[in-house]
Image (cartoon, rainbow, N blue to C red; front, side, top):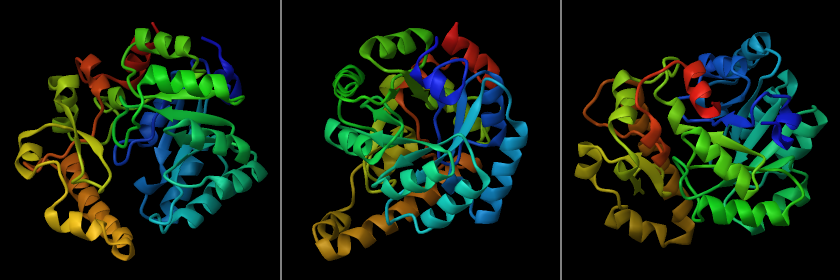
Length: 315
């Protein structure tokens, strides 16, 4: 399974354990590296820059041959911690950064000075070409089967488009839950895959057993889109609580979102409220179950160690 991604990151298999807000942690990424893949954590999983720095040091100490690690950065203005996070990551060092939700220009410039590769989340060809021009090392093609904030195009359409038009490697994100799915993405033109939801139901994930078990008990047909988390459509498991609160923005949010001067603030407030609800559901046993996941949980049949999940994906 040697591809341009395995060469870029010096890993055994062309798989990135996707960064998942509130889910990804040091134990998951450490086991990912031991399993011969890359692991990634959202920088926003850590409240302070000191915590982020400590985690970087720990992961560097845990790194093994054939694995690599990176961090995900939200690079738009809504992330007030962005500049500090980028500075700490560049000072301490890691193998790669994944950028989301904004222009990666500054990240690419600073990361490359520190010898760190940059992969950029994209959902269409126009933005993919833009990040290539800015010097990105790879494009992560977020398709309509991804968990969380997903794209609009199918894995086949998006991966085909990007792999034919770009000279940098394309990594397919979304719709991968087994070895056959990886083979499919490679055939579409991807040099690797980003896999998130199948790793939620892992022994090492720092979320509740209820969240993990939900990924076992529910399937692809139970994944729906909601605007009630961040103001941007996001995939969640259709639990009774999600059914109760609904999936559409309120009439007030709808009115305020039409006001250009207020829209940014409404989104920030909705994001803050939604993330708190998601954190409560992920970290504590509560009836307010807002569990983010993608349709690839269809292949999740048990709560397993990370090593066993990797073995399922590659064998």
